[in-house]
Length: 268
Image 1 (cartoon, rainbow, N blue to C red):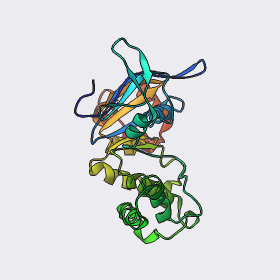
Image 2: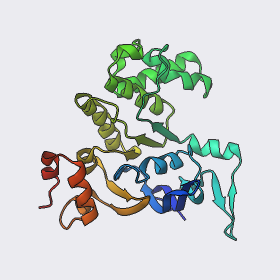
Image 3: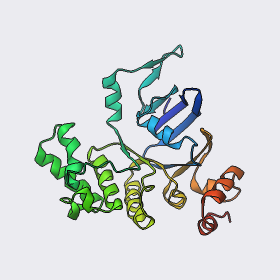
Image 4: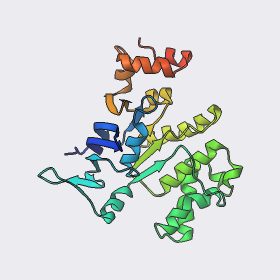
């Protein structure tokens, strides 16, 4: 059972591609209103887990509850796993927004058009109402002045902020980010992370797959360290990064971080 504080409750989740098992019995609670950062080496299953939460991938076994509602599958009292009808899946997924590594903006639409298209075609809002909501979200990510610009006229950081505004316009309860800064030059990364930091401050429930370890350490309410498809560590940043650090996490940080960043996270 999920608690009242849980936005997402994951139980015994496994995911296989053929004979290759990518996720091994994941158990995880995502707290409502918190920022949860998924970190770990490449191939550890971070993005696969996120895609299962978004139901872009169907788990091989196990269950996911989103705000106490089963996503995709539920288990009967006798332990049988059954697939839920499409309308039930859509209803739960409507509360989840996702921002990808690639911006996936329509090149022939302005920033405002990209943000409002789903509001008109999926939500059925009148164009004027959709544009009002779209402008509000562009203002929220600091791009109101760029509303009439096309993606080719925007920097990578601005395009990713448009993608965030597009997700926010659908009013999700939960936002998932899959390495949102991985395609950006370092100088553009900060503007995207600042938007995410502000969203966390507003109480948005966020699950973030990231290699920005410093961001995770300072903004994440909870850090989940995955290794070989399993949750190896799960706790507050101060618990994981400070004091007596787990040797596998230390090995990961020393391998991944440059010397300066590693010193910032060095236990006191």
